[in-house]
Amino acid sequence: MSSVFTQGLLSVPMPNLPRIGTRRVPPSVASTETDNRPRITEVQGERVTWIHWSRPTYDEVQTLANRFDWHPLDIEDVMSRRQRPKVDVYTEEESSYLFAVLHFPVYDKTIGRLNAGELDVFLGADYLVTLPTVELRPVTLLFRRCFENEELRRSLFSRGSGRLFYEVLDDLYDYCFPILDKIGYKLEQIDEGIDDVSVHAKDLVRDIHKVKQEIISYRKIIKPQRPTLRQLERGVERFLPEDLELYFDDIVDASERIWDLLDNYKEVVEALEDTNESLISHQQNDILYVLTIFSVVLLPLTFLSGLFGMNVNFPGFGTRAAFWAILGSFVVLVIGMLGFFRHKRWL
Image 1 (tube, helix red, strand yellow):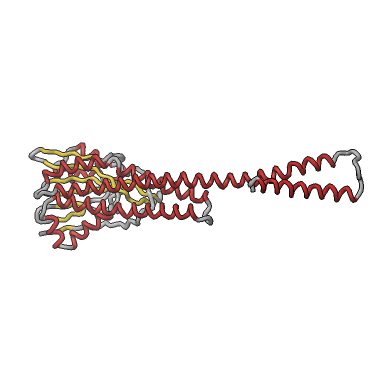
Image 2 (cartoon, helix red, strand yellow):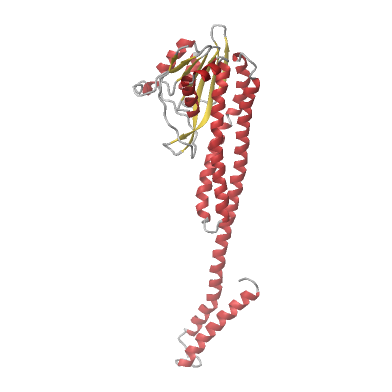
C-alpha cells in the first residue's frame, strides 16, 4: 500500500457567525495564485483512492477531470461562484460516478461571521475526490488521520468509497452541533440579561440582532441542502459494497435535528426580541409618566406666577408679606396635587 500526502493545512477557529456566499476564484485569476497553494493531497488504500484538494484552479480541476473522465458541466459547477446544493448521478459503464455539491458552516475571519463553505464531491467505485472552496477542518483532520494511521486507513478504505464518503459527512455534521450550542448559549445569556436590571434594554437589542442574524444565516445554509441529502441517500447506494443505507439515513437525521434546533432557536430569539421591546416600551412609559407628573405639577404654578406677575396692583402689592404668602400658596398647591395623585394611586 502506498500513500502520498502533501499538506496545506489551515487552522479554523470556532464560529461567531455567517453571511451566505460561497467563494470560487475565476480561472483567469486563480491561475496566477497557484504558487502558494496547497497541492493535490492523495491517499491510496486497498480499494479506494482519496484525493483532497482545497480551492483548486480551473487547470487543476481539469487535470482531475481528464484522469477520472468527468462531465464538463460538473467542471463548470465546481468553478461556479454560487452553486446551490445538488446531486448528479452518472451511470455510464465507462464512467459511473456521483457528483454532489454540499454546503457547511465555516467561520469567515474577514467578515467575522459564519459563512457557507462549499464542498464539491466526486464519488466513484474506487475513488473519492473532495474539493472544498475553503478549508473544512473536519475533512482535513480526517484526511490527516487516514494518512498517519494505517489501521484507520485500512478500516475505512477497505469498505469502499461509499463508506469513506459517509465518514466525511459524519464528521462534517458533527462539527455543526458545537456551533448550535454556541448560539444556544448566547440565547441563554440574553434571557438572563433581560431579567438583570443592571443590563440596559437597548444593549440587548444589539445582542439579539447578532444572534438573529446568525440563526438566519445558518438556516440559509441548511435549508437548501435538506432535499439534496435525500437524493444523495438514494444515489450513493450503487457505490456501497455493503448495506449502508442506515448510515446515510443517520446523516439525514442529523440534518433534520439541526433544522429542528434552528427552528427552536428562531422561535426563542423572536420571543426574546418581543420581550425586550416590551421592556423598552415600559421603560419609555415610565419616563413619560414621570415627565407628565412634573408637567402637571408645574402647570398651575406657571399660571399663578403669570397671574401675580402682571403689571397691576393687587392686595399686598410691593410688601414682604405678599411675597411669602404667594410662595406659601405655591408650596401648598404642590403638596395638595401630590397628595391627590397619591390618593388616586397615580404615584
